[in-house]
Image (cartoon, rainbow, N blue to C red):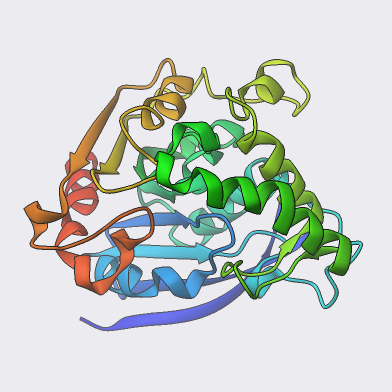
Length: 287
């Protein structure tokens, strides 16, 4: 099967230019929007997207504002928040996917914070179903205790000091993610330090209109038994926000796919490619 890879530039809802790539077969059966984890760029998901394209899915990978192919020349002073990613960037990407594959069913697959975006998207209903991959509360106290010290240092010392020195969260040292705009990091930090995570900002209206309680398309949330971030305590937190959606949690043990480790970031590794059929099979059932 011939697979094409096309770099794209399109606009977020407010006109902000975003970069992405469409990986698609000649005759797709559906479109799949892949939303990245925090500080992770599109190249991280390319191998999964190529495999999904071989199965017939036209996959749109995109970088949210301030990151990767959507990064401005200078991040110091650049205005962006994590809420912008969900309210402006993700809807713009779903609109672009619809333009690329008109008339075909659409699905979304969100990794980590990418699964938070559905409730912020005014066009959520364009998709027939949503797969969450390692999606749960980012509140640090809900994560494995062995990581508490590391997360405390990151949110209270290293991150703020990095912002003070550079004006944004700069890649390097103990921070191995890509550069992040100051506003994105600051909002993410405030949520991760709150036991209720981002929900107080949502329920109070501080983030404007949301659709968490209106989404009624099915959601399947995949968790991994060795994930220190998304566990039995934190996964249901996000899933419960989607109160009207038919939803289920599916727990995957690395041993069940012949793997030694999946964790929070490993689901898209070629070493764990045996997992990839699970969300894709589910999408096909919904077509």
